[in-house]
Length: 134
Image (cartoon, rainbow, N blue to C red; front, side, top):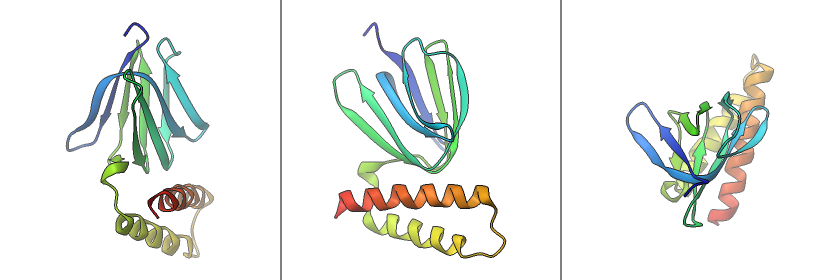
C-alpha cells in the first residue's frame, strides 16, 4: 500500500474509476506515459488509445479513451474524459462504428494534420482492439 497513489477517471456524467493503484499507463501526445507514486507533477492531454490501470492486487483494468486531460499532483492523478470506456464494456459493433466514423472523417478534403494524427491513432487503437475481440 505504501507505493500506491489515488487515481480517478471522471466523465461529465460520473466517476468511471476511483481507487488506489500501483501504476497507470496512458496515451499522451508525447507518447505513452506511465506514472508511479512520487512522479513529478504533470498536466497533459490524452490522445486516442488505452489507459492501463495496474491495481495493488496485481489485476489490470483497461479503458479505451479518445481524448481528455490528465493531471498528476501530490500523488493524486485525475483523468477527465468524456470518452473513457472500460474495455470489458466495448462491443465489436461499437468499435466498427467508431472505425467507420473515423475513416469517413479522414476522407474529408479540408482535414488538418492534427485531426489526421488523432484519427489515425484512433484507428490504430481500434484495429488492435478488434483483433483481440475476434
